[in-house]
Length: 254
Image (cartoon, rainbow, N blue to C red; front, side, top):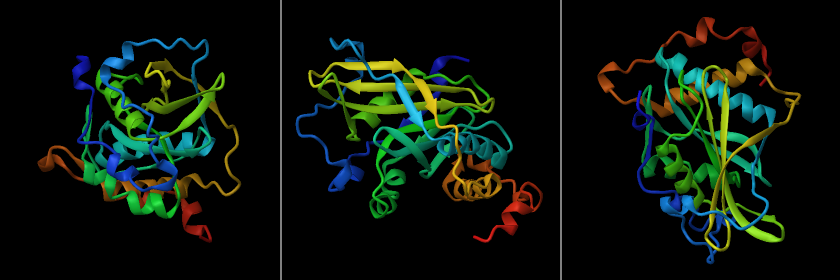
């Protein structure tokens, strides 16, 4: 299968989402990054390569990938925003989207519908994650382009050698639980570094972690937000509430 089939499309950008949102205020000195900038090399001797992610967020990425394929009864791609603080991915947020086995389509309204929740909970978008279903975990050229979209329309900064740099994370997983990541960094000069990531995953789950409950919540969220690209073939598997989750969820006090 040719690389061009691994397609992720986002119409427009996240700019409206970031407007007047305190934690996301754009730096007036930051230039937008074009696709061509990726060929530039930074003069800095050090580059951002590490993606730090909590164990619960990592587990959720895998669960989202598994549950969307389970709901639609075939291998499917799916997209989520990475939420976090201080460069650490702590959670995932799923926008409405159209999915297929080889691509995802999200429009501006799908993203903007998340604005009230993001603002109410004071969340920071620091990257994005998506599943390749049964395919390998890697970045296609379209994924590279989407990485630039997210970099341009979020405002996450850190310092390298006393230089303030802008960054975002991109993650791909698959149903075999393989993990691939990209860290994209923009330097004040405009130079862009696009590096394969080294992952650091927190080994501990929170004390109240209940995987069956999380799976059910994610499944319901996906059921409300995803649609299959070919509408005539679209059908959810409707028996998930009966046998696919054990009684741990039903016995939970929450």
